[in-house]
View 1: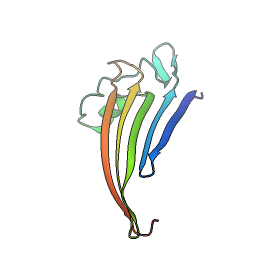
View 2 (view 1 turned 90 degrees about the vertical axis):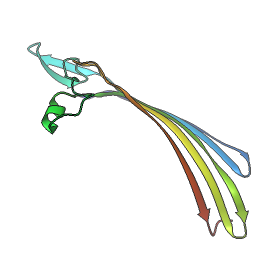
View 3 (view 1 turned 30 degrees about the vertical axis):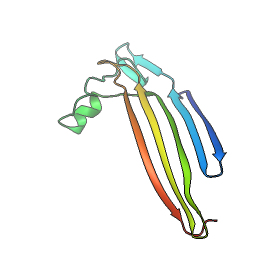
View 4 (view 1 turned 90 degrees about the horizontal axis):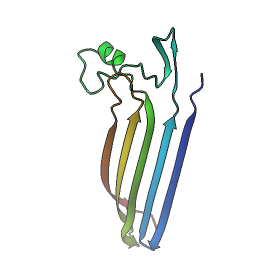
Length: 135
């Protein structure tokens, strides 16, 4: 049985000055629920509400305990990010650039027995790059 899915990405890049580049992107990936049961009690498919998510927020004593008690089928993942690149030096000896980027990512799962634990993460990164032969 195929799982219908949606994917989208949009971005914006700007160059307000000769020495500054700005960018922002946002994206989402989403899967549809394709759940069914056999004899009304045996769950199959993707995102079935009869799947167990009871151990998703706990460390398991064994791999088998975690895999049988945390289905956590992903429903949606989305992210937004933005950043900049700026030339600190651009001349006869190359190019020195500094950059920064921040992002926020969230994962949502289909709810099952024990709920639907979601997670998110924010990240900031900084970079300094030297290009010795760049004009």
